[in-house]
Length: 320
Ligand code: F6P
Image 1: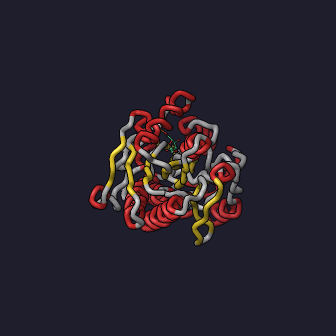
Image 2 (image 1 turned 90 degrees about the vertical axis):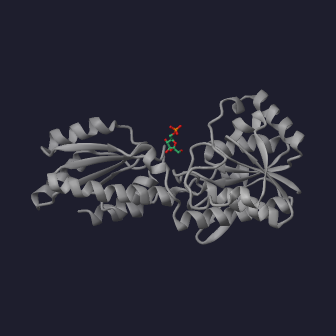
Image 3 (image 1 turned 180 degrees about the vertical axis):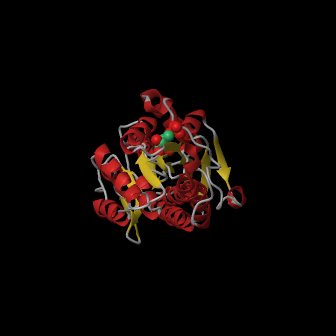
């Protein structure tokens, strides 16, 4: 394949720029022409496409967000939008594209793939909710951002002897809460994958108070079906402990990517370009252990990774 495109789609994630850089530079290294598509599938429909060179991806490796910008496209969900996107790609002579995004972006890629475009999916989302890969690009940075917020909140929480509900992102996946909760010493971790028992949460807080514990961090994933403020109120009522709420929201989607995310982005992007160069069929690329893996794109979307209940129990033991 001679001419390829690259786009970022859905919620941005730290490391997307590192992936774009690697797609462009690995493509050029193989003698391919690489086109950047702006604003995800929206820009594709609008023909917002520009050829990229070595310097168009200079000085972006360390930056959060995405220089290509991103969008969630309603137009691309329609048959008309998809047909239009295919026409645009054919007008530019682009035969294959690298889609950097999450589950919804991969589904969009599958539509293009079924219409004759080769699509290589790179897992770009802070949520870590793509089952075929151990980790997604952006997850590690988001966990570290949450961790640093937890450390700050612990200081003030201890000083005032308060409990704090910290709500983190992740959509239906509890991994950000789990990883940041365990490494940040949260007293309670609430994730959508595990049953939630308010009495158990409050018992742990009261037991902690009885043995002189100053702070209490309740790390709650956004996918847990209870409002953070209502939860805080319930905790306050049942434990008698003043309880505050911090919703970290978009704070955890920005920032310079960690080494781990830059490495994952660079390695998966290099693999995507290699597969396009070799004229392989559409794939989703990820990591399993330390190995870069590639699955058939459609199959990848059906793979479910079980929730790591061992880590969840370990976090509970460590915070008793
Ligand atoms: O998928 C990434 C994510 O940040 C989720 O964790 C969150 O639920 C969602 O995107 C927020 O989406 P938006 O940027 O459209 O508000």
